[in-house]
Image (tube, rainbow, N blue to C red; front, side, top):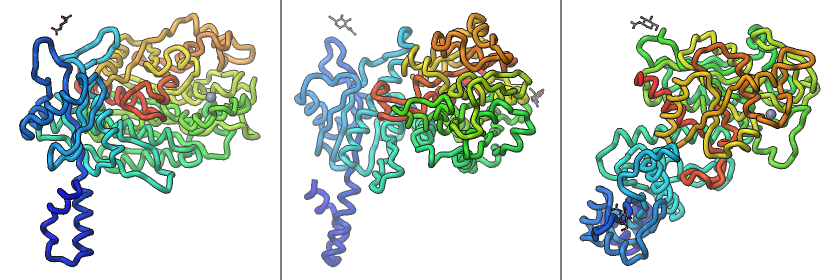
Length: 518
Ligand SMILES: *[C@@H]1O[C@H](CO)[C@@H](O)[C@H](O)[C@H]1NC(C)=O
Ligand SMILES: *[C@@H]1O[C@H](CO)[C@@H](O)[C@H](O)[C@H]1NC(C)=O
Ligand SMILES: [Zn+2]
């Protein structure tokens, strides 16, 4: 490869030696282009390697060398696996061939996702990541018959949070290989970048992303769409005038000022068309308050604003996509800290709708801030009201990271969310909103409601949802408990270990479906 690079550097032949070397080195770096190409599983009775269109055309351009090399390199490539080949093509010194599984894989009823799309995401991710490790400067990706999923796999897999390290890597920017499918590719990039923004906000430490910094960041990201977007960063005095006693009871335990972030995206030409209202829990750090959490693993509570992060990222993505829909995004932002003015177990606070709440556990603060935010959300007369919150550890116990738990009073909205999640592969699963659970939060010694269920741990995700329901009158409401999907170890193959930014893409897909009037 060195010899290729230096001999290719004809333009500097007459220049002084130093110049020549510099330019040669630059050319060499430019030559570090990686290419990801897909291959399906072999079908019975066929000898030909079942390449994708792009891979087949690459193979032709190197006189069949890719197919030959692949077949002598080992057994057929399995789904989601990757093999790298060097030196096949002058423009692409490294080629990652990735296994896409069976051709024509479609909707999988038991998995509740589009297997073909999920396979493309995972395979492209495997290729991108291996090429990233080789430090390629440029990266081209085969759309693998589904440009959007390929772009999502590439964009999501390359993300790494290293903003606070002195030695930062510059990840290669993935580009579409070939000219087809450019629109789908671009859409996938936006979906992936939306989720990456949520991941960045969640991963960032709580002393860097305070309520104020969070709100400023979202405002800054939305500045590009100022013709269709307005941003309000409501201060504490506004919350007081709105009588958000439940939210304020949480925020006053911290020295950090709370912010109620309100963003309006007017994508529908008819600005009075009823909006989709998204509400996200924005606890930028959750110590548990006086009901202090155990020290072990408490650092992860910097991501307790995952609801706000995913919801705001979804609004930004909707704006970037130019979706013809009106969206209001709301994020109550504060810390939950054990300060001198913090809630004490047994305290009674009054929410915006007048209901009184006995706070028996100060670590069940998410439902307190959401209570007021949900009341306020109704003032926009939503067409659909969706809130997302890392609300309960019980949700993680119930479903783990497989799916977001959805508690909803609307079969229509459930259907829309479910369809959206099948398309994105970032799944949802329906959970109950029985009266059974309501009874367990509406019996309280001192107040109308108790912020913990009567039988404490039993059905914890369900009693939390039943609590929120006490602040909802909207016909189409869904509560998304995202505590289980907050972080990724290795379960989702196209995300690295760390905060997941889930389910941003599903929220975007929901907005897109509602915009299309489906
Ligand atoms: C391939 O062959 C196996 C065994 O003969 C059979 O079970 C399978 O259904 C075949 N697949 C296709 C796609 O024809
Ligand atoms: C705009 O939306 C409102 C509310 O749905 C509706 O009453 C009105 O007729 C719409 N206007 C137009 C021009 O479509
Ligand atoms: Zn908590």
